[in-house]
Picture 1 (tube, rainbow, N blue to C red):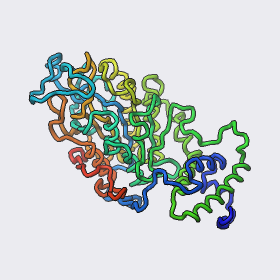
Picture 2 (picture 1 turned 180 degrees about the horizontal axis):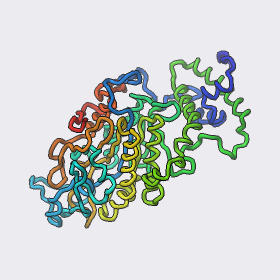
Picture 3 (picture 1 turned 90 degrees about the vertical axis):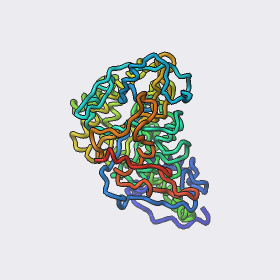
Picture 4 (picture 1 turned 180 degrees about the vertical axis):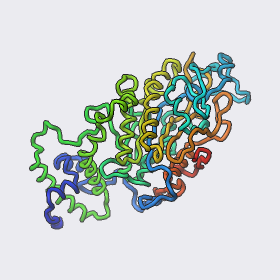
Length: 492
C-alpha cells in the first residue's frame, strides 16, 4: 500500500451499500473485479477507445417530440415464412407443383438447397378486420388485432444467411462487433427507472439465438448499454442477486468489512487512474444489481396478476405458457421503467424455431401455437391499460422463405422479401406499406430495408437516426450506417 493516497473518510454502512452495490457481498465483488482486471491497470473491456466522443446522447431532450417512450420487440428467430402467415399469394395455389419460373430469365438459386417446385401455403387464409388484412389460420388470435397493426409487406435483407441476417436486423451491420438496436436506444434515452436495466432480453429457454449474445451486445458503446439477459426458465431468473445460502461466512459483518476494504482500494485506484472510467462503470453495474435485489423479484413475480390476465396470456396452457409468461413480463417491465424489452421465439439451430427447412406443415404450426395467443394478449392488455399509446410493439424476423419447395414441403431462406409489423405510439393502425411480387419471392413495391425499419422506430422515439452517432476509430458510427429512410406511410 506504500505510495497510495490516504483513504477517504469512513462512510456509513448505508452509503457503502448505496455506492458499492453491497448486496452482492464484498468478497464476491472483489473477486469479479479482480477477474476482469479492474483492481489494477489493464486494457479496457468494451470501453470507448482513447479520443472517442459521445454524440447524440439525448438524456436531456430528444431531437424532436417523441410519439413513443419505450419498445417491446418480438423476434421470430430463424426466418418466419411470410407467404404462410401474412403474405397471401393466390398464384402459389394456382401454380402448386409446377416448376418455379419468375419469367425474368435469370437463374433461380436457393441458400442451402436446389430449388424445388412451387409450394402453396399449407394453411387457409382469410381476410380480417376493417382493413381486410389476409392472415393465415395459424394465427387466429393475432388476426383479431390486425386493425391495430401497421404491416411492412416488402421487407428486404442483404443476406439470406442466419448469422449475418440476424446481425443486420439487430445491429444494422452484417459483421459482429457493432452495438445492437436496444443498446443504441439505451445509450440515447437511458432508463426511466434507477432500479432496473434500460435494456432487457428474454431469450427462448431452449437456447440463445443465432450469434448468441452478439445480438444483444453494446459493441463499442459503453458496456452498461448491453442487454441484460434474463433466463425466465431458471429457478432464479436473475442469477447471483444474493449470496448463496450455502456460503455461511458471508455475514452482514463480513460484508461490511469487505466493502470497507474494497472502498479504500477503489479510491486509491481512482486517484492513481483518474482518466480510467472502467472501475466506475463496473461499480455502477453492481450498484444496479444491488437495487435489483429489491425491484427485480417483484417485477418478475407474475403470481399477483389476476386469473383473467393469466388466462389471457395462456399461462395455464402448456403450448403458450412460456412465451405467454415472457410477454406478460415484457408488459410488467415497461410499466416499471425499462426502456427496451426484446422477447425471442426460437433458439439457434436446425429445429424448434422458425427455420422450417424440412416441413412447413409440421414445423410452423407449433411455433405459431406458442406465440399467437400471447402476442395478441400483449396487444390487448397494453391497449386496455393505455400503454400502447406510448409504447412500440415490433414483430421481426431476419428474413423470409422461398416460394418453392426445399425437399418435398420445406422452404429455404429468402432475403428478397419478408414481413414485419409495428403497433403502438405514433403508428398508423390498420395499414400496410409495400408489396412483394406475385410469388412472394422479391419485393416489388415500396421495399423497406432494415435501415428504414430502424430509422422509423428511432423517429417515433424522438431520435433523428442521422444525428445519433458515436465516434469510434475515427468515424461517426450510427445504427443505420449511411442508409435509412423513415417509412412515413405507417406514421399516424
